[in-house]
Image 1: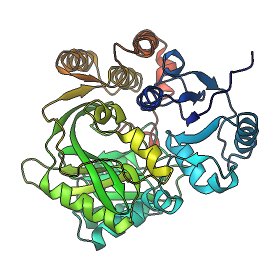
Image 2: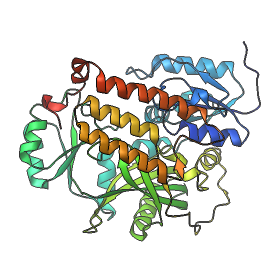
Image 3: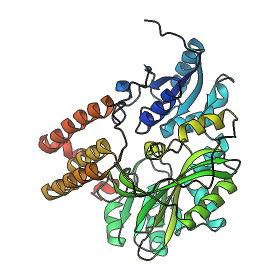
Image 4: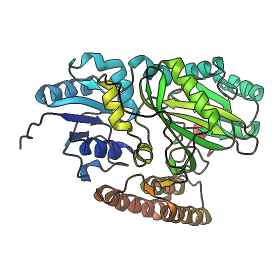
Length: 420
């Protein structure tokens, strides 16, 4: 069946966690919404009443996405109604920053400039920039050998956190690994992890993660909102936020965010992350995400027009009608049920928690559901996606808990062949 042509269609690349929030915002603005059908693990966009169609495409492979590029160009040629592309998953953000100029000139790429994307996703350059501009930043180093890893860790001081140089990579199944002392570092990294040309290590600041969502025009922040992350989908506190709290913007983080955005001459939307120890007050810059935020809905739900502003700014419309002095509501909890369930399944499968841990995690999920006013996937106006995801993840938890021990053990390995 041929899809009816409409005047203004928007293609979302990445069927990922914030995809529903973006699709709902675009749908409410009257756009025809198309979502790429590349991953059904966390989004369930096909079940949303705000998604008009799905586009099935080749994987964005390691060879610069040549097959994907050809498929995208063909799809755009066949669909002159598509006026904009919104990259949600980071791999599409990176790919479009490198290849966006090869697409038709009348297609709007809803993303900051390529130079900003490339700089923000280069972790070492961003740490250098923050250190140079006086933004709070814990000591760090890049290492390329096991011996240098041990040497620099001792120099920086423990505890340390070790991360891949690219956020698209993982260390085992983790985005980062925390080591409390030299013995733990040697146990976890007994050999150099395969497919990692280098690693970024930084002194670990124990504390609370602060996410600052912003809308900026020519290096000036027009709107700013802050949340704290109270739980994640990883047992050790790394990973993706599954619960958080809206708070009043911290004065020091407002100052550092504005300084960083101005230094980058940033136009678009983004999210800056800091970690702060509530007892000592020590803080450090973590990263800046020049893309659709993972917890986009928690900002959209209290009136921050991230999706609409991103589209307008990409089209050159800088008069957004935003008041920089506006303060968003504080004291509001949000939760992400499907992410919590997926994290529980992973923790069981990788042997990170026992029966007691399962009970504690389950009770935390229940508490989150009871006190959250914002649910990352659920809204009564569009209820089917989260129910579909709930059934999927519940089945996977049962499989992880009662499935083959050999199957579970196959997924446990981390660098050096040890559990973190």
